[in-house]
Image 1 (cartoon, helix red, strand yellow):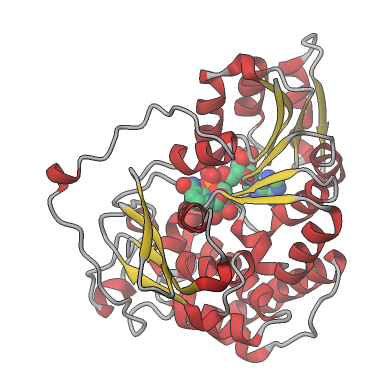
Image 2: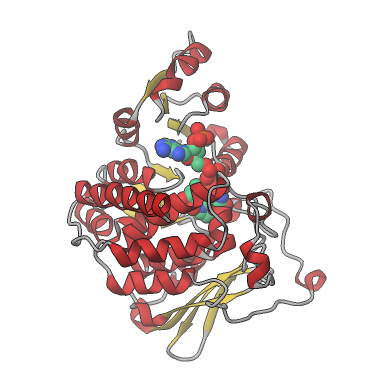
Length: 383
Ligand code: NDP
């Protein structure tokens, strides 16, 4: 029996993970399940999966959770410190699926235990790339990428030497607005943006996918996970989301990982690693699909990947500023306070007015994140 903690258990990645765990429940002991404020769903999951502890980051919702779990023997806790304490509890595997930089401190707490962390929470790695990868090395932790693209690359690198890689190509679906004109993009609504053609995901990553910031964040994520240098990382738009990414070697061989657009495939690869496990996903039927297409990204209509590449090149605190400004802008867009194309404008404006020193600790990254958010909000109010 292996033990697992799931941070962000009530979200889309959390649900896919628990769907797989439920199919082999005797094989897993659940240590911690966490959420932000969704007490009812967390209680439902806790009753099904019987964790040691269920934690809500939003302490004001704790009484509701407590009431729902009274008499079950499951510990309950609330607040940021409790979330970090739960993430630090020993577990064979921690599935990190909190959305946004809010997941950074719990991810760091799990890494400091020296265990295996399956990372979906890309914003943590974008904001704290150097600090987080240094902690992985220092504490002897193992980082497994959950993101389908990075999981694909991880699989394509298995049994090969990274020094032999000529190029890594991240595929991008292009999102729901891939073919939209600039004028149509300017009028895009939150309801349209969250309707992804291939993937069923949380609201924030769906908007990121529509702006292509998701691919930009993934470029920075890949930069930290696979040390081949930024110039060897590229992006190609592949609307069918069947090829999840590719690695080209110096001899001209390109290895790709293909699979259905279902997060349970890369999650299963992390849960079973280094072995394999069954999933209920429909197998690919390439003949039925017929055609797979690839095209260059259009950085005029979707400037996010250009901004992310520039941020990765600049390094230091700049990726954290990019991420914070994007989180603020996406929240404003979802709340109907910012136009779709203003998201990238706003990130660019924040980046051009604010360049803090490179952070060297978790506390410094969190400080950069806090200040970048407040600058981004100020800029928005004064726009
Ligand atoms: P969701 O929005 O569906 O879920 C987010 C989870 O994080 C929920 O459990 C939520 O709790 C919790 N949460 C939100 N805010 C906080 C906070 N401030 N403190 C603690 N917990 C919080 O997100 P997704 O599952 O879509 O994405 C999770 C991460 O995985 C993101 O980083 C995303 O980029 C990445 N990812 C997602 C993919 C997908 O297919 N969805 C694919 C690849 C990567 P509550 O329900 O209580 O709000």
